[in-house]
Image 1 (tube, rainbow, N blue to C red):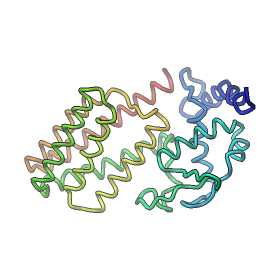
Image 2 (cartoon, helix red, strand yellow):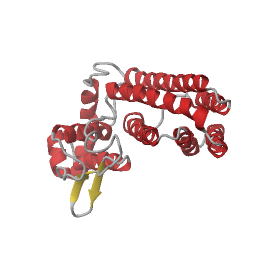
Image 3 (tube, rainbow, N blue to C red):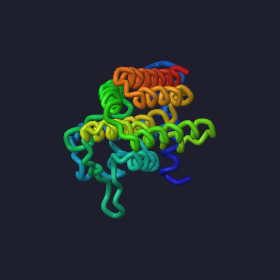
Image 4 (tube, rainbow, N blue to C red):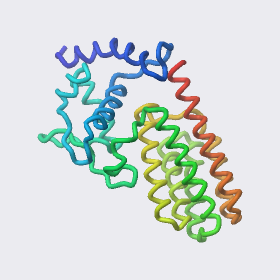
Length: 265
């Protein structure tokens, strides 16, 4: 067993105590989280504390391991997660860098703000999404072209197919295309950018904190998509906005249930 492997094994025992001290699950059974998840969260917090901007060089893996009292193996797994969601870039032979991101919410103004495992941030993000997507749905009901309506319907069908066949990747693709299709049908490019970036940040929260899986809301989501589409097709702005609000509220409820399940068993 190498030194890193031995340290990684020791991390498994130590991480339980860290997780139990987490402010959202302190002292409660079932609040264990894998070491690489905790370290990924700590790296994001460190980026914010050091006021690192997109393109800035980060501490090395060795430095991060020393700062966080863990092994390079665990740091490396955390970096893989952060690289996959676009928060960190690992350049071979050059080190780690804060990812360059020119997105509206991921730009230098916002890049150090959102912490995917901070429940307050997750709830604020849903609140923000609710404002965006009710507005986008309301506008789409009066502005959507026949081509845009067909695209929204096709995305809803893709999402339904993904759910019925148990293909999570297909479901997620349809979900993205559905919400972005409505934003496009609003004919407001600011809403398109905002919806895109908010969904990207929500995906980060899901991947880091919830392993990319959120509860059992998929079946309801499919029906909620159908209600939103029908209201937009009918040209009813109020019904479209209400259906979008219901969908976002129920999705947030599902996040809450999953978080409670993971923290308290």
